[in-house]
Length: 97
View 1 (tube, rainbow, N blue to C red):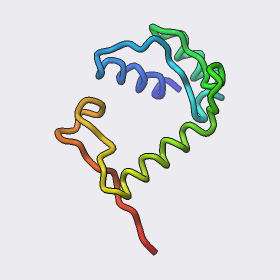
View 2 (view 1 turned 60 degrees about the horizontal axis):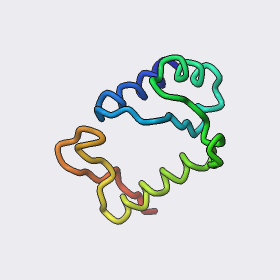
View 3 (view 1 turned 45 degrees about the vertical axis):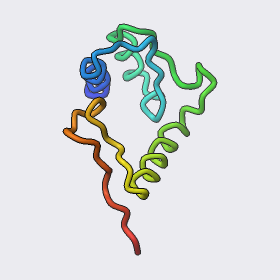
View 4 (view 1 turned 180 degrees about the horizontal axis):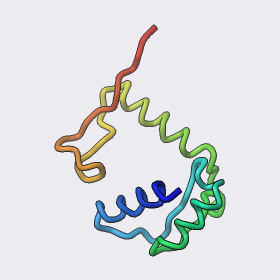
């Protein structure tokens, strides 16, 4: 729980910007301890994806599908401004049977 919250706050620091809200999706939003820690420490309001009418259980899966599609096409998924890599990079390999 503390690790998850700390990762979020490190991402804020890395980008140098503070968002207007923290919208939480994926399984972590079901964990009351994570949500409480985020709400206590975040400099912005913290709400689950459902509070905005989004499908919180689907967003994470959709994001991974998007990254997989970009990887399959040889397109980058990691960029200097978001992850600190030196140049845009593709992700992983697609294993063929």
